[in-house]
Length: 506
View 1: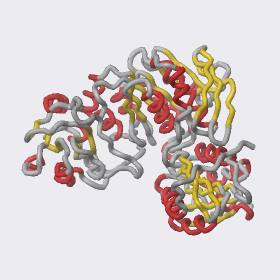
View 2: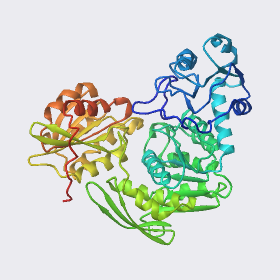
View 3: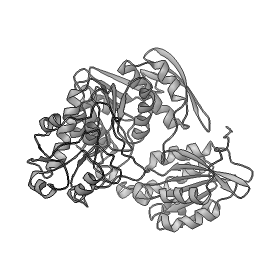
View 4: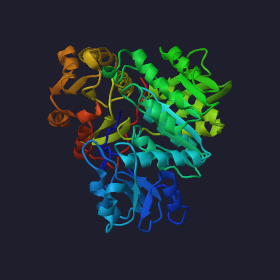
C-alpha cells in the first residue's frame, strides 16, 4: 500500500488543516462520536473541528486517533496531542485509564489488531452515511493525485468541496479523510492507491463513490504483480465500491481499456464514460496544443464542445483533464465554470512546481517532480522538460533517482529511459541510486553529469554544475529522497522576487 506513514508522523510536505472554523457547526458532537464508534467518552469533550493522527500538525479541536503505525504507537503521543488542544483522543479501552489526567479520551474496543484504526474506519463510514455530497474516487498508475487536485480546484469554485490532502490514499489515509468530511459537503474527492492486489476493494467499499475514475494503467508496482494486465485488474477494483447506478470513468486510449471496462460492467455502475483521443471516447480531445507553460484543449464532452486552457503543462495533464471534465459532467456541475477554473490550476509541490533560481547575474529554472517516479511519469516529465526554453548557453538537465517496485525488469526499465532522454534533447543527466546507474551508463559520455549512490551524494555535483539559463528537472521514487536536492537548490539559489522565466515554444 502507498504512503505507509507511521502513527504520529505525516509525509513530508503535507499539512493537517482543520475542517471547520471557530463559531461554525462542530465536525462531530460527543453523542455522534459515541454512536458512530461504540466508544465511551471519559471526560468532557471539547468541540471537535477536525481529525488527526499527527501531533506535529495537529490543530486545536482535532480528534486525535492514537493508531499503531509500523514504527510507532500513537498512544505514545496522546498526552502531547491533548496538551496541544486536541478536542479528545481516541484510545484503546484497555489503555484509557492511563490518560485520566491528560484530558478527554474516547475509549474504544474492537476485535481487530488496532481498535483505534477500526474506530476511525467506523467514524469515516458514519461521515459517508450522513452526507448528501457527490462522491468521487480516483485511482490510476499515474496522475491520480494531480487529477484529484484538479477536481478539488474546479469543484471548490462550485460548492463546498472536501478532498484527500497530499496522497492520503491508503488504509489509514482514506478513513481519516472520510472522518474529516463535514456534513454540509457538496462534493467529495477521494484518492485511492494500492501496490498489491485486493487493496483497493476495502477502500472503495468505505468511500462508496458515486463516480469512480481510473486515470491510466502503467507498469507501476509491477514487482507485486504477474503482469501489467494484473495491475489493470487491481485498478478495476475501484468500481466494486460504486453505489448502484453510479458512473465508471475509464481512459479510452489505454491498452487495458477493455479489461477495465469488464470490471466496470461487472459492478453496480449505471453507465460507463470513456475519455481520451480515441474517436469513440465520450469525452474526446479533438485538439491539444502543448505550450511550455500551459496547454489548450479543444474537447467534446458528452456531445458538448468545450475549449479550455490548462494552467499546468504537459500532454499527460491535458489527457487527465479530460477525465476531470467527465467527472464534472457526471456530477451535474457546471462545465463552463470548470473550464474557466482549469486556467488557474497550478502544479503542486513535487509534481511539476516551477521555481526561478538566482545564479550570479542570471537565472535558472527548476521543475520539481520529486514526488515519486515510474517509467511513465519520468517519460512525461522528460517530455515537459523538452518544451522549456533555456536561456543563452543554458542546458536542459535531468536529475533522476531510482524507480522502485519494478521487479526483475527494473534494470531494463531504467536503461530504456535513454531513448526518452535523447528525444527530449536533455543535455546533462545526473543519477542517484544503483538502478538509475543503468541509465547513466547507457548514455553517451557527453550527456553524463554525475552518478551517485544516494541523493545526498549527488547534492554538491548538481549544485555546482548549475549555471544561468539552465532548466533542471528533479524526479525519483519517494524513498530515494530526491526532494532534498530540490530543497538544496532553492536554499542556495533562492530568488523570491523572480518569476519563472517565460517559456517559449520551439
